[in-house]
Amino acid sequence: MMEQGMEEEITIDKLKTYFRTKAGYVRAVDDFSMSVKKGQIMGLAGESGSGKSTVVTTIFRVLPINGEVKGGKITFEEKDILSMDEKKFKEEIRWKKISWIPQVSMDSLDPLYTVKNQMMETILTHEDVSKAEAAERSYQALESVKLNPEIAEKYPHELSGGQKQRVIIAMALLLNPRLVIADEPTTALDVVTQASIVDLLTRKKKEMGFSMIFVTHDLSLLATMADAVTVMYAGQLAETGTAETLFKSPEHPYTKLLLKSIPDIRKWKERKLYSIPGEPPNLENPPSGCRFRTRCPFAMEICKDKVPEPVTLKGGHVVACHLVGDKK
Ligand SMILES: Nc1ncnc2c1ncn2[C@@H]1O[C@H](COP(=O)(O)OP(=O)(O)OP(=O)(O)O)[C@@H](O)[C@H]1O
Image 1 (cartoon, rainbow, N blue to C red):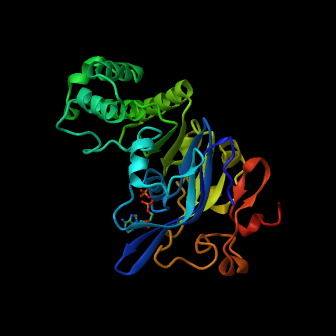
Image 2 (tube, rainbow, N blue to C red):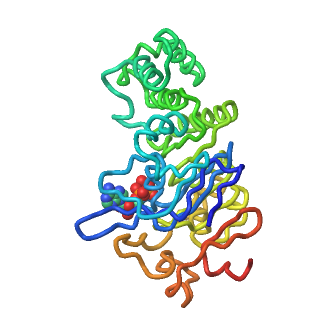
Image 3 (tube, rainbow, N blue to C red):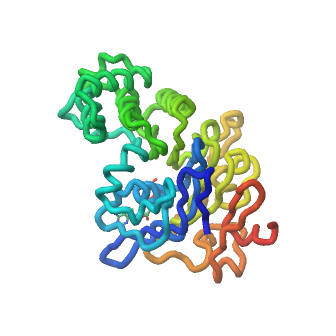
């Protein structure tokens, strides 16, 4: 049982989110637990299809129509936000206290409105302020993400990818949220722009003191920015802990293999890019016991029979693997 204490911004406890399909349920997130401390950047990593987006769309309550929460709790400011009614969640939490930075894409900003109008709309829907004040705050927000305020009068198609992402970040921070969900925010950008966006996000986090969940399939991106890292595999927790622990002394075989697949720039000449053999399992009918056992080089008999319970090691390091069960 994950308890919510003073230190935690958000606690996810045994979350189950499934998708209804013709063939049955896709068990996209199955008994997944994680907590994010106040002021912390939590990286949420795992291969494509591991359930990262499903976790964060469950938090933000924007699941696709066939998604169903089948169990678990998400505690934020002492309330279970999953059982809150939609009207209250919309008025009090979504955008105001928990905000969202998506991947830059065609539809992440409204093509019909200028940047300023979109920003003002966000403020005016949530706060009782004058139009002049909303406009002023929009200009300030653009400056705070190092954009020229002239951008305010432009339409999304007139902006570069990097500028668009800065506008999206400015909008996500307009209402001074406590938790920011960044869902692959740098994926569609070139490497240099990617670095400047990561820089901007870490700077804003320090200035404004929010917490962040940074979703990525690229573990290497987290090395420089995350305080803590959670690794998911096939809808479940593999391992979570401080970034230092996860990068320097990972315990789960999956985390170890993911780290092995990060190219090391210093050894590029001798490098053979490693990728984990096999495919993630079909989540309509996942393997019994540990879901990673079908690809795990260390799989044992027990891995087939029993789901590994998350084991807590030193310093909040949690590992769900039968191999570490005895090290406690
Ligand atoms: N609307 C849906 N209906 C049915 N299955 C879905 C739906 N959305 C996602 N899934 C399935 O749920 C599982 C988890 O997907 P999810 O998108 O959460 O993973 P992810 O780790 O975010 O991957 P990616 O990095 O590719 O976005 C996958 O097996 C996916 O095919």
